[in-house]
View 1 (cartoon, rainbow, N blue to C red):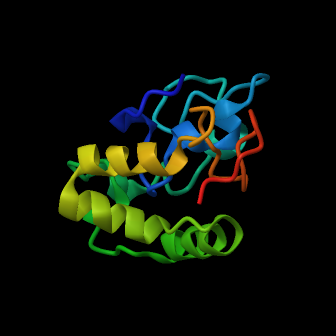
View 2 (view 1 turned 120 degrees about the horizontal axis):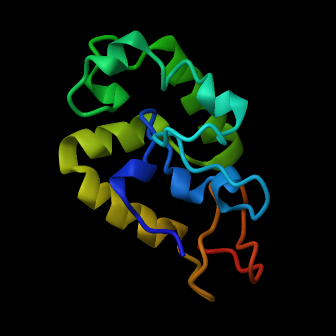
Length: 135
């Protein structure tokens, strides 16, 4: 079962706990904030997670940067809005304004299957466990 913890929220506003790479059984990704070397290379080399400005932030989130939203965040936000109906800039603004705990409660409600209680991936339209599509 996925725990809705701060360590599973990427600096860019993605909830790693609902990422297909985190949820899969084989070659499971431990999440963006993990120091593990078993993460996919795309996560290890992520320009957003390794941003020089992010290191200076207290929160560990991109919203704290003076350049927010930078071109990198705008690019991934656009891709996630179009492909996955997930608004990363809005996620970051929500975290900034209402706090990480409230964001995690929202994600838990948004990403938990109403039918079986499994986590619905950001990258899928329905529950991979039972096929239900949350409305």
